Image (cartoon, rainbow, N blue to C red; front, side):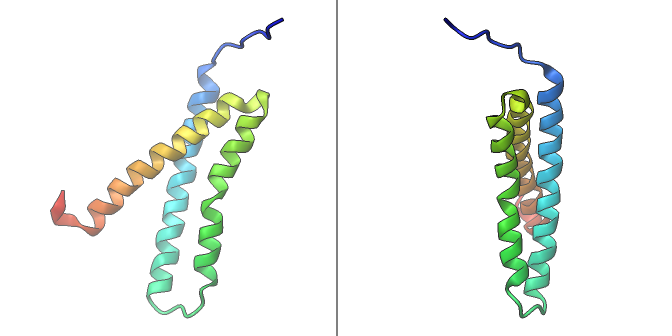
Length: 102
């Protein structure tokens, strides 16, 4: 006997997509702030280690959301949003720091 296939609902997927992009851009902002702090005067390596540990949080959250059947569509949208956010964020950072190349 096969299990019934649930319909894909747009609201959880789009909501997860928006949450993923926002989470990614917040992480990029934190990484830039920590990076400048480490480059300009902070002798401690603790902020960089914390930023690296926090980098895995959006992916772990997305995987946990995917594992639960009730939040699976939200998790799929969240992981898509994180991926889109990282690609767009890399383009924005490249254009900020290399202004003549684009």
